[in-house]
Amino acid sequence: MNRIIKALAVSFLILGCGAGYAAQEDLRAEPLTLSECYDLALKQSELIAINADLIKETEAHFLQALSIMLPHVSFISTDSQEQEPEDKGTTFSTLKPTKSSSRRLNVTETLFSGFKAFAAMKGSGYEKEQRTKEKERAEQLLMVDVANAFYLLMEEREDIKALLNIKKALINRIIELRKREDLGRSRPSEVVNAKTQLYSVDATIDVVKSQEIVARQLLEFLVGRSVGRVADPYDIPSSLMPEEYYVARYIVRPDVEAARYAWQYAEKAADVVDSDFLPTVSVEGNYYTQRTAFNKGTDWDVMLTLDVPIFEGTEVLGRSKEAALKAHESSLEFARLKRKTPYDIKDAYVKLKTAMTVHDTLRKAFATAKLNYYLQRKDYERSLVNNLDVLTAIQTLEDAQRNYIHALYEAKRLYWQLLVAAGENIKEGPHDTF
Image (tube, rainbow, N blue to C red; front, top):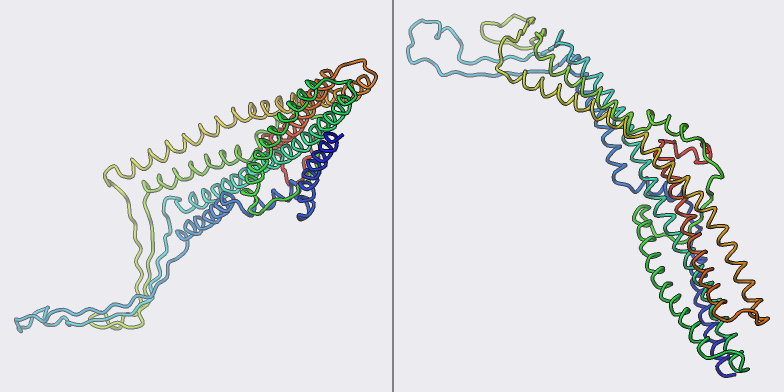
């Protein structure tokens, strides 16, 4: 009888620890959903902030290109003084004043620069689209990281709950065996066998708890705050669209579009360099507010300049070839990405399809294992099976439940990976496309 009381005390203590674990979670803030974690990660991510700055850089590049076409206006003030000649004879140098000054408003306008300005402005537009698509793709890839960490945390916590339930079943089993042992209906070895299995579950719980801490810290790193309870409003889709539906969307995936814009930008950059082979025409006008010396009394002047490059070494030729090769490299990268992306989508589709099938099978296995455990207990009470059969049923139930939990959250992770692989707009909600 004393052994039974001690076993009951141990049972209440263990169950109290499990309840304390759950109560500790309940005292935390409202549970975070996947979408809320993603919104927090978007604000926290340095990579997204860098991509946003790159978009602003393209706006600065556009202003630089536009400046080629706009007039340059400046106010120039000049004062000069020369040494007086030692020879005081009447020469031109003696007539020339040793001091002079001028104040003028200068306007310079480039009339023709080999279409450099047009190419640069067009290229800056392509660059902005490229950076925008790269930012969009970075946000999608961030969703994969958040979903992986989020569902990994949920998986570990569900695993802990499952193991605590198995532990409870084993403790109850030990209590029952000790009662039967006192009555002479069970052997001491049966109690020892059950305790061995209980200790193994204890060790597994410790390992999973450490994994839960690592998963929680990973999610906290992504969202930039502490994470308490989490809740998932999304479920695995009952069915998928045909594979061709997702593969057909590869051409509008943000990174593919970014590669296309990068190629177009590189071509315009080559046009900017090639414009140095063409002549440049500019006009410059000055309006003088003050002028001394010989030019005193002349209020304005205008100068038209034609600059025709004849030979400047091989500098421009080298830069032209380099820019052309970069444009060719960008076109090859665009072609490679167009060829690779459909296979990425197919790979994600096959993995999710398989995971959904495995999940459905393991769900049935888990339900069957629960039924088997219930039946084995009833048969044991009627002395139709032995204790080893019941312990085997508990072990089978443990394996089936943990395998089901892993399959469930693996399918959820692959679910979001397929969305991102297909370039879906994840902000519109995942169920819109399934």
